[in-house]
Length: 109
Ligand code: FES
Image (cartoon, rainbow, N blue to C red; front, side, top):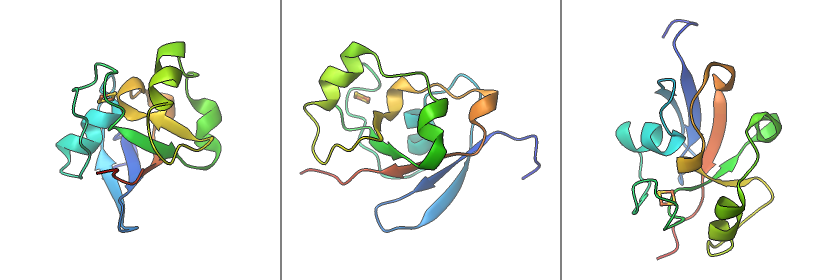
């Protein structure tokens, strides 16, 4: 992978770290799902399910566009929510998020 290629780094529920190729404008949820990792994302990004829950690692939290009220409300319905919880369908990939690190939140059922 060249330095120019956008990517994110995603830790799965077994603690395995994956480097995933990313495209600008894609939802982080789509990048995780389309690279074959296990993320339910039941509503397909419509902000109706909270099954795309991830933890944003380290300093990356501050680089994201803050949560909307709607995302905040939907996260209230998720389990194991932490301060760095986000719904990955609400984060769009862009150049300055190259190398973004996230961890899949536990599945709840
Ligand atoms: Fe349903 Fe993100 S995929 S809220």
